[in-house]
Image (tube, rainbow, N blue to C red; front, top):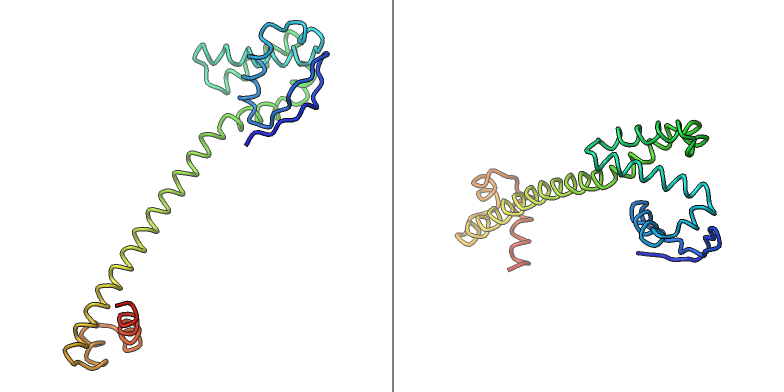
Length: 175
């Protein structure tokens, strides 16, 4: 669900504040303001952030791993004074945040896959149990129809008398 508000004011522009993932917001921002150097010039921190993100994307485009691309972008930005105070003070947090957001899709896929496999396993067990129960119910009904008593049916099905009673009661209630 996309929620929008127009509370973010940056450099003379009212910008929509969209509550979506960072990747989408970055893409939208680059699309909307690709020709808006004026905005970046009015907001130094935004310009620095834009440069930092651009360096990460460039490094990824050259085939670097995400972690290496982030480290390279951080080091070069610190050297050149871009977001230097934030990157020095909170380097670990920035790295963790960027890696966590990137791996979120992978994590969600793995959680989905684990849940799917658990569901399949539970379905197989449930299906097997129901099939076994149905087979016992049918056998108990056939033996009861032949006039056999509960003790004989329980012995032939290798189960106890309460189970046979339950099977026969369920069988007569369902059929």
